[in-house]
Image (cartoon, rainbow over all chains, first blue to last red; front, top):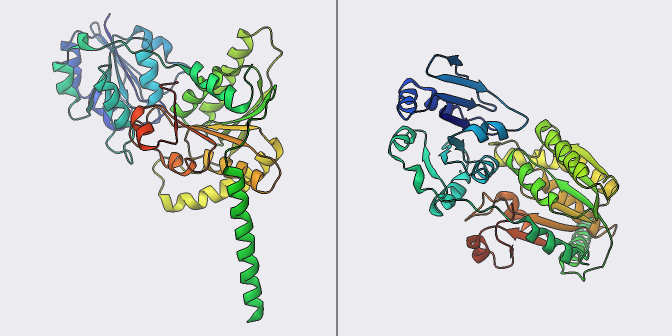
Length: 165
Length: 216
């Protein structure tokens, strides 16, 4: 079973959910060999109707205590550009496509997507270019993501607050 | 006429004293050795909380008690914090149960709220933040950018300005910020004791910041 997981974290990203569940997109997703699509829609107002046929299943939900399970079984993750969603996905070693929400003020999320793309860890696009990217991208070119090092933070903090042993 | 002049002079004098006190508080201080630290952590929505909990998770048990401040509408962060603290307690049998508490203040700014109305909602948050910070009297405030941190940090600064307590303010800019600082970052860059960025581009733009690489 090849699974595609779409997540918008704690935000609302109606354009992405609508785009991914549109008939044309579903055709593309099926043609790429996926037979399960899971939509985590957060605060969104677009709520696609879940369905299950012999060859394809669509699941829809708002939130879960932890997305670990759904990330684990995903073969591809499509996510909004939130740090939490991106980091959790990359740390699980899953291929990631980030979709930029053009309606966000300043769109600071674009900076992270662009940087991680520059380093070869993910692909990014907008809702309108997503279908094209899905068909043309080569997931094997993505590079492994080295995790962050919070121990450097604790060492620094211990020193500046006077806790150093 | 004379009364107005006297009043103006008094207000001016008070302003000068406050600014002088602010300068004293913001000056680099000597490090006081200590065995433990009363920590106040500001958690924000979504990724902010995830990032800050990763940072708090790397700290030793000397950072106790821990006070978390969240916006009153943010139940998700409350759940994340409770799970996190439970995990920490389960993992570390040697230390005694670390005390922690969760405090709620009104949100300073909703996502996409106009900046002008944000001034008023932030002032409202200040009204409730200051008594909280005054009651907790943390040694250290740790935050990473949600609007909620502005009234908390200003309250912590006020504690110093009023001579109640010097509070160390540590700001870690979110990993999302590669090339530009957030609005909170731009404000707190000038008001924090240690300002940490996670990408080299920001270190180049803000040489006084601290760069430790990616820490979340």
